[in-house]
Length: 336
Image 1 (spheres, helix red, strand yellow):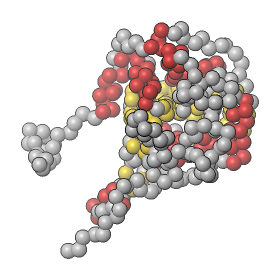
Image 2 (cartoon, rainbow, N blue to C red):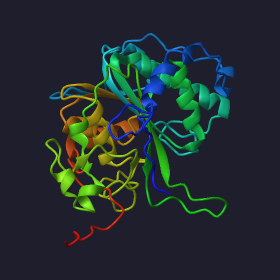
Image 3 (cartoon, rainbow, N blue to C red):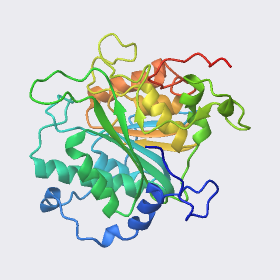
Image 4 (tube, rainbow, N blue to C red):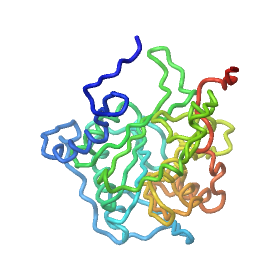
């Protein structure tokens, strides 16, 4: 049934303008810290960071790029840039018993949740007032992270999904083909947001060749990406993928970080990653002239990541934007 106009609303065309999700999140952000939200990890005592002098094990200039070795819960509170970070991107251990160099990835659930809350807290405290945080996390801990960031008073801007086609086969349930990309800001009205840097072709342009979208005065035929991310170069980094770093697990594609970094930081800005892994965040940040800080628990992983950051560099710069994510084939224009 066709949508009917509602003339009770004072808006051209008679359609209602619904309250946006971000507006709702803004309103709840001030109230959530006072709510008595309890989770399993709250039963475990919070980690107390050590007060120490920290020095990067690896460092390069132009732009300033630093890699620290140690527990991020100790390193981040002692950084000279504490409170000045523009953007945090975190892809933490999932607690799936993956052999991450020296890190033990099989904690009891309550301890893992407490660890999660602790590293989130040091990252939030490191942000500038206009700063944002992104967390890459699978289904089993997404809800806990969302609730903890809300009770810290942050505003959820987007709950995005990174979709990939090669999930691990299993017969017991549907195959997992996504990870959540959670986007929160300290201040929704005062955050870095660069939509023009991440535009892609709209379906109206790429499928229908709609003259109306091509006639726009600004960004003709383009749009901000939707909140489900997929397409060329967006798959899991594995096998013979040229981005693949064989020593590392659960590697994120460069285009993912490129979209986040370009959208939520400016040139010369400061990006922080508490879990260096294969070094994707700092590699992409450096390619786009952002300063970056990252920490890694194991010296072996850190050495491999630094080789990529300092010598190999970004391999697919610029490929996260400008194209089309349409799932339909282009249609021939109708003849009159």
